[in-house]
Image (cartoon, rainbow, N blue to C red; front, side):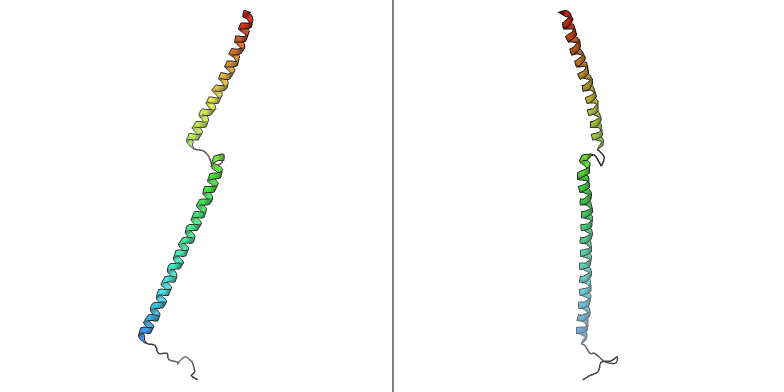
Length: 109
């Protein structure tokens, strides 16, 4: 049986050596490409998850008014408040006129 030590020689044809080096290089390159693609996919998934969480928060909080309002909404709310005040004033005036009309009719009788 032969002994293996630091002086043991290995003979291999040059074409096999080149094929072996090429196979290792291709395997390393393929591994790096697959690893990079997985990193891109994981990063995209993380970004999508963050965007979806923010969208869910916005979708829930915006209608409640917890995230502010559009300037048009503020203007519309202000105009509605003015209309409510004017309607209340008109209702009071109508009540006063109805009361006065009732008094005038009772005095005429």
